[in-house]
Image (cartoon, rainbow, N blue to C red; front, side, top):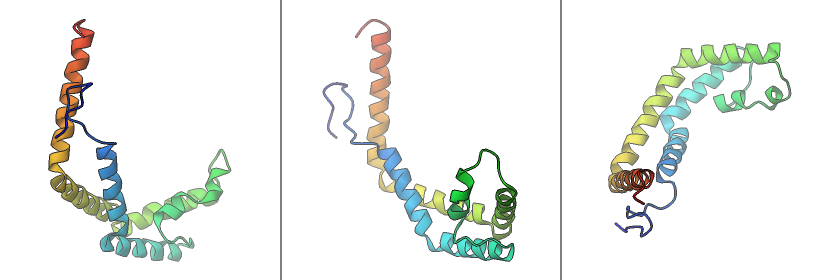
Amino acid sequence: MAIAWWTGAPSVPGYPVQQLQQQADVRTRKDSRVLAVGAQWSACMRKAGFFYTNPWDANNDPRWTHTNQPTDREIATARADVACRTETGLVDTWYAVLTAHQNQLIEANSALLADLKQYWKVYKANIQKVLRGGG
């Protein structure tokens, strides 16, 4: 573990927590369990008259960005989305899979996360020292 001379804390590159979260998100979106429940959600939406490949397409439909007030179509889409998420268990599956990937990444990166914890501990102590007039 390298020590940053300006803080006395371990040197931690970049934004490791954000990077790990991004990795967990990408793995979750590609996970076969999430893809399967996403296909079920899409089929449910089709039955309701809405044609989206996945929930992000419905959420990010460009038609919703051009109005200040939700349109009747947007409200109907949102209602169908919530009903289909409930019917398919999309949210429960998503969070179970995301949590599993997060836990795998935490275990695989425990040394880095320990360094980061130490970094912030030293950083906080240095700030407190400065605020007390000792820095």
